[in-house]
Image 1 (cartoon, rainbow, N blue to C red):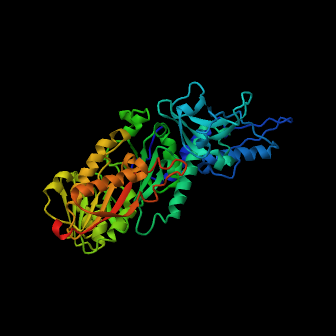
Image 2 (image 1 turned 45 degrees about the vertical axis):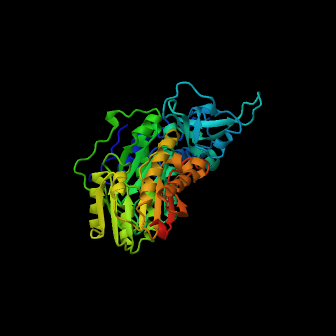
Image 3 (image 1 turned 120 degrees about the vertical axis):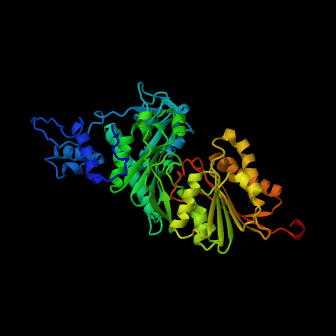
Length: 514
């Protein structure tokens, strides 16, 4: 399989090209375009592109099964054999734990599996079923869903489609490749419908998360729409690498006028048992022209083809930026770990008197400055490159509004104890820069270990301890998470919950404390 959809250079419209690729796949399939149904009179019905009402480029994978069923009906058959397309089956243990998979959980661990066929390879599509009872004589099973197998991951199966809500698809009777294409297009279409229900895109926001892993039924896959013409596909699971061309092809059908950029998260892929060969790595484009995107009416320069910084935008903080900005009118604002200036630009748009942005990356600082110019805020935003710890310890200024949004400090539970000390230190130093007259403090963590510990209370207690060390009294105003386009699966919550943005009011210092 080859991928031809990762370039943003001018090209022919992608939909016909993708459809042609699909048509070739259909022509080569033993299932679809040359099927005979033998009847007593030895007559047959041949399903062909010439015989159908669809032009060749219009036949899509998910339509093939419907055409198949139609042909059977026309031939006078009442049933279709399910033996011709045998997707391998994995059988779960039937117990209280595996009930979670029947209820919608997508990640199946090895201990939950009772029976696995031999010779399965990473990325193979599998049907997941469970016995209808624990009776020793029972041989009947019920299908839970269809997913992808990985023998090298702690997630042995990632269920991509639960049959309880999609029983009409009859995925287990399909050719595996067609079944996967059907699932992908279905999940992409549902994801798009969900964002439209949120009002995305809109006249003032054209950048958002379209697919968010388990939240949209596609564990290990994320898609960010970046502006009106580009989408970045982020792979963090082995199955995504194995089925890269199918993912891109199905997504292109849903987003026909969008250029697709494929990126990977190497550390997450290694955790999933997949070492990315150099031949699969997409080269970084030299002298890439920026993609101008809009969020909350503010324009940003982004570089989606560059390596690092994931999909090139952090749209998870969109609503937190807007909320904080409403409290910045006439205020002096400090944006720590400013990246491309998201909080700083929103504050300036809301008439902040002055904003200081600080980041350790020169590229981030340069882009923040360019973004300020792009929006006409260069006279009210200053950005400096500095380690934020050193900056805060040497800073003599005081601020009315401070936001601290550091990178992930606790990548796992094992690093949480050490990371909590770092969070405490950073927040203590940030609070010391708050105006003696009091002000607004937003502090964030994007570490799921910190966010989920004790239901989120651990992070808040860490900030409370930092405030005591800084000798500043705080009161909690609000706790929020990622923007709603970062959907979560209620069946596995809070596993996908990673971002916490805690908003505090820092009370004025009393006379004897100043």
